[in-house]
Image 1 (tube, rainbow, N blue to C red):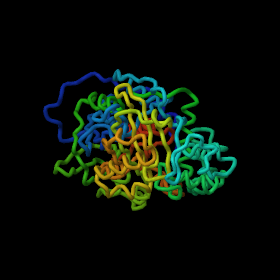
Image 2: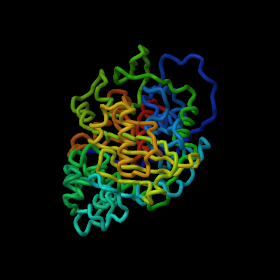
Image 3: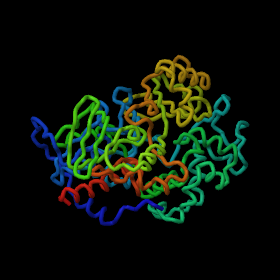
Image 4: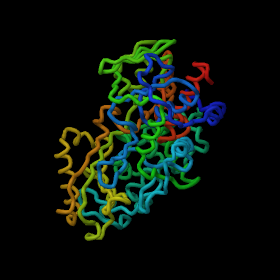
Length: 480
């Protein structure tokens, strides 16, 4: 496999670094040149900036949007403050937990009834628009193979993906013997694991990819292997005041404020310096740069320098999960009236209705989730039309909800211009072909972001990728 695993030396170098957070005087005018520019104020960019600052480097973070956090996004304007992005802090998320500890950000256990990466609360199921049922195993709409009938639709994917899991070590997926799995789509891999045609159809509904056909089996296998590995070591936590409170605190600990609304429109990456031009006409220059811009956005940014055509092709080929979340305002718990669970899985246009307990919202948070190619039919709709369609579908399946729900905030990661999707993934065969190219330095520009991690996943993976880039940058600056 072309990818190189994270070295023990790299881990030890990072572990010895202090991320002191003492406040420094605000800079009246930032210098025109810095040691490091960091592009993107998500978890990866902020973790990199804090490490660089602790090592004595002058750092400036540029963020394209008008907010801090990237895919860490607590919707504070929605009752219950749900998370639109990262929420779970795994037991083994050492880097994320260290940032929280340094900044006095409280982590707490998830609320009772919350979903995790490895568990799913009781869910009602509706197929083909039929009334939802709880006893899925004996439902007439259940046409799964006999050995599959007892598995809820939402659990089919992890069941078959992790069946006879060949991975043991977290870096096994980088080894040559797994090249054959790299070449397989999820559909091929799950079929080989014994999934029936109906099981494949149901798994294709909610998969965190465009389809089962364009997703790399090895990429998904190694991520789910990681989540299960982490869950075996202990329970996950959440940030007490929302994940955004962590990224906000990380940004506030920097000597120089993150500059918002700095959409990068051109990069000049030479061997000795990197210059960035932003859409507002501003320019920034540094000895080196750490770029965390997601590939679906990065692929369209003009870059001067020694950028191989195959590297831009690697960015173009990397896909990102398309996802829409539709929040509901709930007047009364209609699920208590119809006697069904609040959570509901369907193969209809809204796919999954999820209820999250909340300490601040008596009714909790109810959302509809739509993933993958199903977003295509919804993206052209206005928020008002999309919200009305979601309410209509919910009421059609659950008549008890009539008059008790209305549409609220909508988050469409598919059309969000600063990521153009949610979580990045490889297509079949692309780990061997392009895996090493996605994050290969271009001149003095280095790359981070979750899509460049090698051992972990989620926001811990984002921090891992940041550390890998920081180690190289500090060596370049002579500060290692």
